[in-house]
Length: 390
Image (cartoon, rainbow, N blue to C red; front, side, top):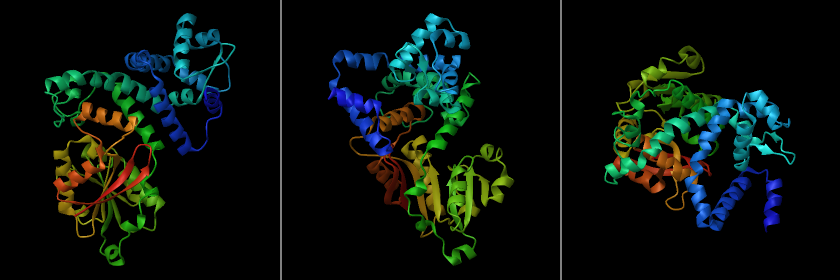
């Protein structure tokens, strides 16, 4: 059996679904074979990984290896290139190799692997800094916060582990500026890189549901309102990938976000940008739209604030309008490790949550909306379109 596993190690499957299933099975196998000592190592010493990777980023180790992935570097060559002392670098590389982040050859030289090349990207570098500094401090405060809060589920965005960690008395999204000026750009770079790798909801959602009638088009009805849509990536994607769908497309976000965009460029592509706070009623130009789309908005807020958002949308809807919520839908049982850990991060940082289908149904009920169904487009994370009707 071990020999077969080593064969898989040397020749992993190419199919993405097969790789994902095999990866999860291997993870479950590993945990089933753990001794208490192994569990101790996994839990207690996992905190080393981000700081050591941060050192690799700061040294430009990953960038150097990834600049020529075929080159084999000796410790001495790398140390001279990076300006590091040989013994220190050998210890760092030994650690990184043990977690599969660089490749060590039999002659003691090092080269890049797929993980190395990813860590050399600006998005990964930004993510390392964001998690190593900002998120680690928040999660480190979670036990003390929950004890102080009487072990009740956090529901106040101004009173969660984030606030205890950073000494801030308002929600994180209300204008918090980290003390280190490099942290916010790192976070933005990380978020930008994530958008580039995410699958599109349009691959699974029946797009004919969005089609307007000839009379709707004649009446200049809005087709799609992207609520809290940032720079308008989803608006642009919809317009470009489905030019047959007629009707106005509206991008909404805070005035500070909209003012930073190239409005003429968006307009030339058929996108109308409007400053709007989703905790207020929809503007007249967006009322009666066929679809109100929210991507990764609701998981930033506890239920009561989500109901506020939904109520304003409900007030703007007409008979055939729909709300499209583009977020994870967790299974009610057996959530994956990556889904569960993201939920804990939302709890600690925003007093918010990732939701299961039953929780989405309950949220719809609280807002007086009908839960119509779920269209999943990323099985690994559960990313889906949840459709709500008036």
